[in-house]
Image (cartoon, rainbow, N blue to C red; front, side):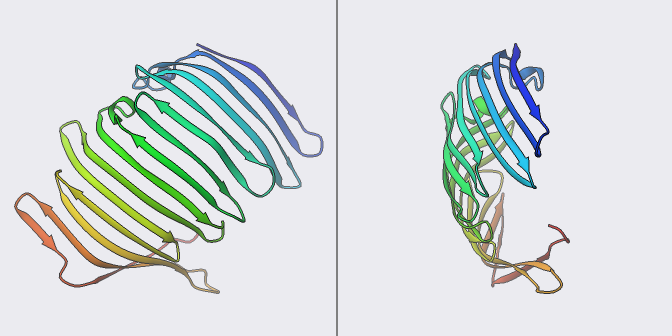
Length: 239
């Protein structure tokens, strides 16, 4: 395979670039033998940094085969001002799908739909299905996320992980999580509500959560939380 195209750089009034590349039967298996394929398509990007302000645009449209399955990948990423915008993300590989749009800036918004119906065709040695949706809202200063994901019949090699459902929502300052795992090596059911706080002046950041319900089962053993428990973790500086 090959990559051909043009790349130009400019150093007047900051730094600017523009690139237009074409892929011809590119084999990602050269980098990792577990991902053989043939990729064709185009990658385009242009942007500028001036007075510590970055603007950019990138578009990709790739098709071909990956791990013996047809592959298509499209989308664009731009930053016209202080907002990052991801538009028209579409990944199709065999029976697997991932799509979404998002923006991150003064306003945060977005949604991603996940339908990985044949994990083994995308991820080596992992079988099962993962489906769900991830939503974004709020602002860059206080982003919020809502996650609803299910996994069915997941196994890796001889290790059976089983079925799982994850529901999580909220902001760093106020969030909740529910996780249920069954039919695998370990059965798990847990519920928690947490908050990340920062102390004014010192900048100390502490995550605290209350575990309201938890049950773990392995073989003939079961551990059941009898009363609410508090979890506390102090983050390292800069995290």
